[in-house]
Amino acid sequence: MNPRDSDNIHLHTARVNAREASDHVQGLIAQRPDLPVAVIARRAGVAPSTLKSLLSDVQRRPDTARTISSAVAERLLAVMPDDLPHRDRGYGGRSTDATAAVRHVRKLLATHPHLSYAALARAAGVSPTTLAAALHDVDTGQPRRIQAAAAERLLALGNRTPLPHRATRRSDTVDAQPVVDHIRALQLRYDRASLAFVAQTAKVNASTLVSALVDHDRNAQRGISTDIARRVLAVQELPPPAFERRGHVTEIGLLRRLRGMCAAGWTFQAIAQAGATTSKTLTAFARTLTSTPTVRGAILTAWAHLSHRPGPSPHARQRAAAKSWDPPLSWDEHSIDHPDATPNGTRAPGSPQPWDPTLLQQEIAFLTGLGLSHTECYRRLGLSTQRARKILATPLARPDTQHVIAA
Image 1 (spheres, helix red, strand yellow):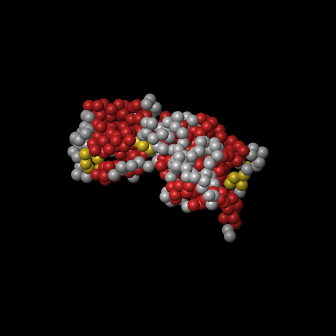
Image 2: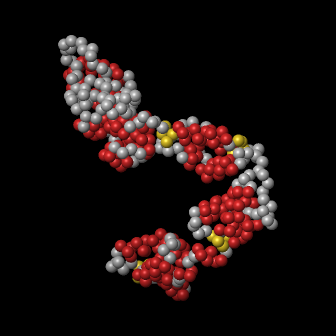
Image 3: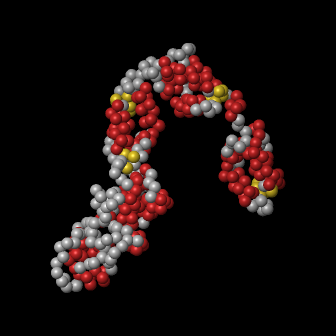
């Protein structure tokens, strides 16, 4: 190997104490708190993960001598504050304040209602997303800069550059009004049915759908993509976390549903997963009895999916039995939300079950009709297999027709 190459490899692999480079970067961060660490790393030609790891190690273990490559240290130490991007300077003077251009666009939109901001952006050779961001920032009083050339082209619209003609409906578009009406119907039917969620369910781009509807509001003659209209109109049901509005649902009814699912063998984690929420949210509701749209949607959705199926958790079932929580079949949908309603069945909450063979046979027949095995029936009724068989073998003293099958 050439001795000079050997020296270069040694120089490249030499390691130095990272303290000086770390202190230098901390100084840059203090002067430019608006910039992410990744920007400084990229300007120094260092992987962002490397710089973040270095700063984290030095901060957590200040007494430990962390080392880095001498080449990395040199590149970090070479970065000066003036080398970093600066918004006010427009990244090298190629940008300008967007206020004048945005005001001109707003004036054009007000005087030419058939135009959309996207059409103006395209006419000026500007990305519609860039113009939309500039409109938002200027309207909300935030500073915004755009490329000077783009600003000039926007200011030229209506002067040196002719405005786009009134848009005629393209052959690949259809009337957007049925789509608008369908989305409004879904939002009236469901809670938590945002436009973005409807778009996600329809598998269309949310910003594209929003843009099409905004254009429709400005000019009803503008159409919407045939494919987007077809996808949105095909959505007849919305999945969780959206849920159908129910005006009669009460907090006590939600608590009864939650406890009922636990009595059927479902854990809070399983209920939360079925309702597209978290077990922490359900625990907080059970403690405070304060519901939100998220809680209502989660419990109602989980109830629809789980209330008629036995859960896999014996612990949840035993815990519910110890607390005398009533299973789902103890409640009717028309009464579960009424504060004064009592559970159906042959027992009062918290009191022992007076079983006899006839009653137990009726219960087993009812539950097996729902698809439960005998073992699952015994579990649902709070009986061991041995105890159930003993009851079924007991001679019946007299028929008792007063019992009501536990629902």
